[in-house]
Structures are given as structure tokens and as C-alpha cells.
Length: 65
Image 1 (cartoon, rainbow, N blue to C red):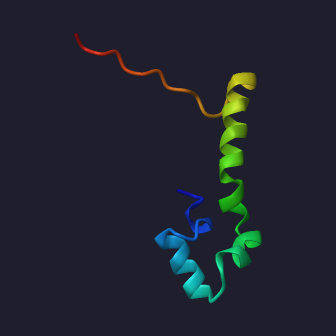
Image 2 (cartoon, rainbow, N blue to C red; image 1 turned 90 degrees about the vertical axis):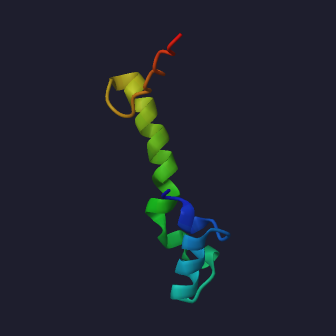
């Protein structure tokens, strides 16, 4: 997941903070892709509803009886 480096209790965030030698809060302003990833997902989902391109909701498969 893109946002994992921003959650200080997850292994990838611990690795990044230890490697950089700073707290997670200190590298947050430079993690633009990580922080804006969920925002872009919502924008693309809304774009499909409005314009017909973006993230399309997939219908659930039919259940066998």
C-alpha cells in the first residue's frame, strides 16, 4: 500500500525512519506520492462517474446455487 511509509507502526515506516535517521513526521512533507495516493484514487473514481474514464467499479460475480 502506498500509505504504509506514513504509518509509524508498520515495518516499512520503521525501516525508512531508521535508514533516514529521522522520525516519520519529519519525512512526511517529502512523501508527496504517499500522502496524495488515496486522494488521486478518489479523484479517478469520481472521474469515471463523470467522464467515463478512471477507476470503474466491478460488479460482483453471480453466486452459484
